Image (cartoon, rainbow, N blue to C red; front, top):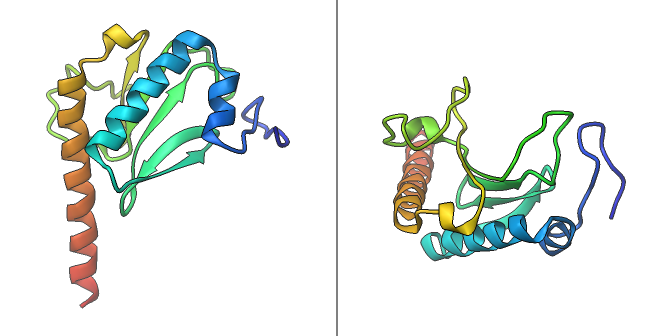
Length: 143
């Protein structure tokens, strides 16, 4: 592990190292979510951002944040799955948690049985389409 930063008590060099650090119940959820993301976005890149897995096509699309990877002193349970542009997704407010945020919307999972795979996939496919639209729109403006 590399040096810590002022907001986190850990610093990982790889997703695999992060997986070794977290408890088994969170690891199982993270591994399931990683498979779902790569099934939906096979050409995305996975990298650590703030010591958690983050997924990018053209821009950052989503992230997986196990509660064992702390941020500051805010206690949290489960594994958070977040959409960087959740504000652009079709959500009536019953599935994704906003918690006062304007752009990043999330869902917390406490076990693999909490994950409605088909529903989550529909959100990921939509987020990937939004990412593509944002990219094409930006590209068209440059012409």
